[in-house]
Length: 548
Image (tube, rainbow, N blue to C red; front, side, top):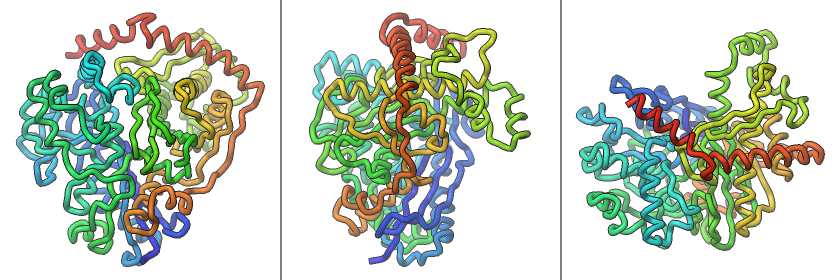
């Protein structure tokens, strides 16, 4: 048995690979490959413009990560490829792509390259909200047993809504697709030469419960041709850490690894991170803070949690019920403010001081007393994932005056995402799912003001994982299981998880002040999100009509 495994994380804007010691999870080398095409939100490459709320990716960008980042990470680690026993990967989800029977993405067929529905739909493709609403309404009307396990609502981000949108808007693409694949599963197919499905994505994003997807009868009630989706998503289902196969000769040439090296089943980025954070025991909630936030937790029993993104048997680790909730915009909201709303003078001042712009804003806002800015925001710039599951909602900012400063708006946005996280935690506990411990991972854990705010708002200690690539480490842990180094993900996590970098404890005075501000957030949340007014939906409809 060799000594190392490789984990590859396919994020929203880049892919990263890490080489890890099987014995203790030590990260020995890494490499990052930014996607040349990034996220396609305005138009296809050399193609037509895209409507609002679309978000696509280029499958070639993902394939290039295997060719560049993996061999670069192995070189950086200085290990012999013959000593690498396994490779695992994860991707954002639900990021779906239609392919031919041999795995060729429809977006790479010349005849379909100019058709938006032929391209991979990224997780934050929110243009299928109307389809998601119809799926939810029909499932509720029919009393479908699976609906309560998704908090009573189906998301526009998930497989069925995206497939139904394709069928209704471009039926030729829908029927030309012989398979609909999660990006992680498609990439595993590229590595080992045979298609498989990962149980995590099938359960959380594909509505698969109790061994089956929604029935053909249910699908036909949505659209008479929709039952044709079922054979396109069928296939061997693998648990977390399952072995999908071995590297093909071609994939071995791409990666620089040895042919036959074990390939783990695909994973979902946040869910594999639970293993990297050592957060797989019941009651240990993981918050993955990135472009969006995913909140992941295991439990020993299944409970219905309103607004949860899914409760799946074996969805995080075998033998336990996995829970997922989240916020569809967190880091993306901060990036929006920096790129599109912050006055240019702040970038100039940050350059003069020799610090990043977010660090400058943190310094300007950190000492202000809680509530001192008089502002409140709803963190719905990319819709609401939990607990409202409504991507037709949009961001709200109230309390502005002529004296409001940009750093105060920055802090207000940080606080809004913390309030959103507290809303989710409270939903879990109100449903009888205990949250005993909270751990944070992801790129946003570099922001110390944000961590302080989260600890204060959530009124609980916040443990921070000490790894630069938590999802890639999680994928590597799954690879170790697939290679036979450990019997299961929980055992591998106990040996290979990253240590804690630090723990943030809530300050009692600030926490009390945030309680008062959070009460106002909930009032605003329920007014705009639970029927107090439909103004946000009407504004979205007006925009759609004006730009169509």
